[in-house]
Image (cartoon, rainbow, N blue to C red; front, side):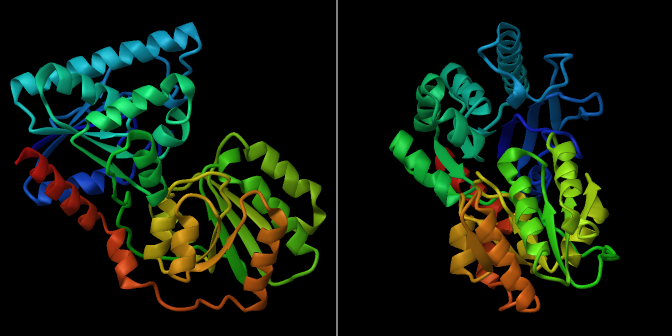
Amino acid sequence: MRIAVLTSSYPHGRHLAAAPWLPPLLDELRRLGHESVVFFPRLSVSAPSSAREIPIEWSADPRPLVSLSPKRPHDLALILRLLRRWETAVAAEHSAAPFDISFALWAVPAGWVARRLWRHSGLPYTIWSLGSDMNTYGTRVMTRGLVRSVLRDASAVFANSNMLVEKIEELAGRHAEFLAASRPIQPPAQLAALPEGLNFVYIGRLELVKGPDVLLDAAARLADRTGGWHLTIVGDGSMGGQLHELVRAHPTLSGRVTFTGQLDGERLLSYLYAADCLVIPSRSESMPIVFTEGLQAGKRFITTDVGDLEHFVDHYELGEVVGHGDADALERAMGRFVEAGGDVGEPIDPELLHLFDVKRSAERFAEVAGEVLA
């Protein structure tokens, strides 16, 4: 089976729109005997170009597509240029060496391109919803109808959380299937040297939607009454300066909070595996990759009640769930963890690990795609 993969995320590295879980999935599909060609907007001069990865040249503007607004004339022109060039690039490759099926990551914009190709050439397409397409474009009056049409005409639809499955079925009135977006990780050669005591670790972008400000608010309250713990914040983003100011404004946090900045590879894993508890304080989420990585590392969690986090953490007894944006509840949950001495609880259920295994995701996609083609 020859697959055209359409994604608005850069497949590799530290880029703002990186999709680190995509290469492992394509490797598994290749292991199963399937060929994939990835088409994506070039957002960096370092983006590779090869027989298996074809970047779409569309703008000298380095901003990710998600940051462009169709309400601004200049941005709209850029978006339309990308969509036209994207469709042209896939169509040209399809003419030279036909694809059997296309696989669009996100219903828009990649799904829109895949649907255009299906209408013009009959190439069947599948959709993998990964959050922003349903949570943002699927709720806006201007784009809701477009998302619905893309979903309805697809030969198969997947989503990386059960919450998204429900939203798709409600919007489009059709079946969707859970398909985990994850990447396999291995323990690093050396763990990060964290302070003595219990260590909470946050890994993610420093953006409002991820809730790092709520976490620091909770940590400041916890520092007033409980000893023997430390918080490490791994990542960067637009809130970096504000978060450093919050720490400086709370003398009780002095020596309690460490910022590492952006990390990747072995260094990132060294903090993940060294953590006693992984904190995910998001205000909005579907299924964060850091959760799937924390599972593989056998971590305990304190998360908010967003996306699928509440279901998995509660059902499989992985830790505690608190209301999103509730610093008081988060502080109490962290305090209970400290008072319990970091009790690790039961081992991770093998059934859950299998559900988030990239091999399982690749095999399931190939099975469904085979049924579509049959």
